[in-house]
Image (cartoon, helix red, strand yellow):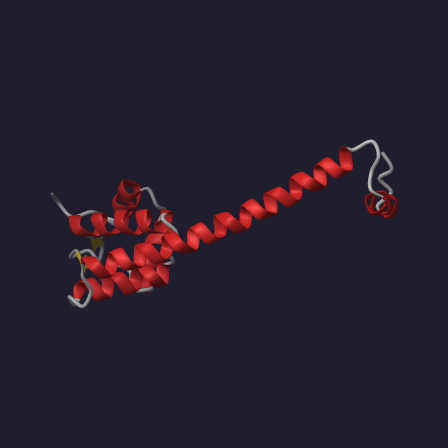
Amino acid sequence: MAPYLRGELAKEAEINIETLRFYEKNGLLPQPERSAGGYRLYPEETLGRLIFIRNAKSCGFTLREIRKALVKSADGSIGLTDFVAVAQRKLAAVDLEIARLNGTRRKLEALRSGLLEQNRHPGVQDALDILNMNG
């Protein structure tokens, strides 16, 4: 396939041109070749890399983590077991965040129930009085 121009690549990767520029500037993408007219020409591999970056971001990886993985992959210093370990650590972090959010959810449900009770706890009624929300 013929090389992509910047706008074509951004459209194909479903990102905006500024994101493409940012990725280039911050080392997530190799510098593209230039046409005789000075236009950037991106090979097909760049589209694959952009899709990888988008997918990794959707899994919660930071751009710093993605850049590190791409650099280590390019120099051969990271293998499949390393990627699996990184994914496992990310899963553990997600599980902790889910547990924290579930705790927050339970507290909010208790708060809502307490606010809607006919015979509210005096502390709840005092808070409503302070907020001028006497319901």
